[in-house]
Length: 369
Image 1 (cartoon, helix red, strand yellow):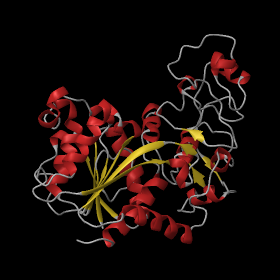
Image 2 (tube, rainbow, N blue to C red; image 1 turned 90 degrees about the vertical axis):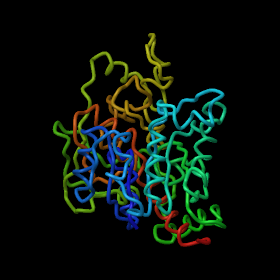
Image 3 (cartoon, rainbow, N blue to C red; image 1 turned 45 degrees about the vertical axis):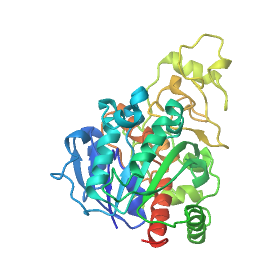
Image 4 (spheres, one colour; image 1 turned 135 degrees about the vertical axis):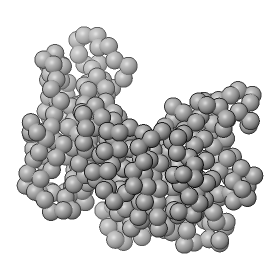
């Protein structure tokens, strides 16, 4: 089946669908530097580098050209129009990201879509934002008589054998009735377990990055042998001995001295000084034997959260963060360091994406047309 990836970022969602056998035909990403990482890793996908409001027309997308649309408008695009919610939500310019995502779904008429967003979207404005999104995708009137049957749930990356406590809202729509979503969800889990018994097993930070050596100046390391099932799952499918993006941030002497004091599982609260940080876990040091908190776009910054290496006095390298996000080792990130951190921190973990791809495949095979 064919896929279009909107708000693609570097391609976390696309990776899982490709691994599951889908063909991604188009991707849309506004940021040129991020789009370049996508293109370098997926050279056969047509990349549209533009603002979604400029391309939600028949000049860029055609009815019936794809089976699946995936992606999720950034949550910053959601605001409310007070009492005018029903009439004002879709026309409020502050909601243009959702509006144009919806417009493309309406235009292309896919068999299904996947909408990924922050967990908190369900409680925004006392649930009004979430209910309005559901209303749009389930409205026969708004979708030319072809509404979607919707299923949604909050997923935690830990449940998918990922060493990270990351919760996200997933909304899935299919143009089929009488589909037992929960039953098919559980059947998909069982089917993957038969192929890979370790897929959903708990994974720790050590399981993910324990075999990575000291970072190199150019980010390249060689001849790494996987020593855990998770490392083996992510190991270089191209059988190259080279892994990239394993370079560390250069911290100030003050930051390094602070990190030296903080032990595994501790954070800035053990320091005998006041730290100015908006993050409660600032200067937190990861523990080898549990999962990481959510990898954010600031994982290279000590004050950004619990991103200090379990035993070294530095923050995570991009490769270590990518491992914790479940990116394969042969996926290379391009651009400036701030952009690479943004690419990794904002991505959908590919192991979750792969499960969603398998789930969608089973959904479309089951139920009534």
